[in-house]
Length: 137
Image 1 (cartoon, rainbow, N blue to C red):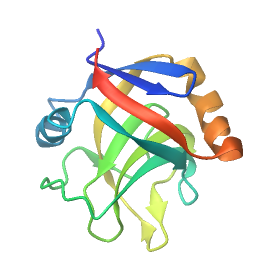
Image 2: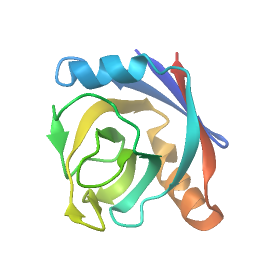
Image 3: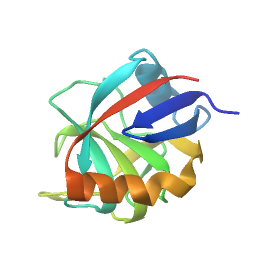
Image 4: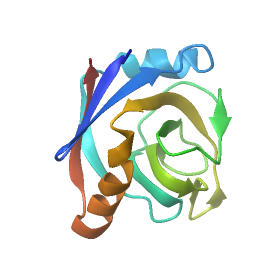
């Protein structure tokens, strides 16, 4: 069962909340839905794309955090050493920024459309920023 629909360009993904392990992060982000922004290639983190959020204050700490998410394990970095962001891994990823390795809260997992993770990553790598929408399924 999918809790969210994520749309980027021609790709649509189903995702589930990771409420048991990241309840505060899920609650925070759910309050933002529908959430619209832009996604770009993750220049520091390997095969990933990201949604830069600048100095956006999320008001949650670290929970269910990792530096090595698998493809489709979406992270929210609540800020601190680097800017706040959403990380969208599509392949081998080591979450980092210009200041070094980071850890983000794994709060969403892609459950449908996983076959389009790599095409999404390649699209934002070669074509640049794309609109992204997170909304209730």
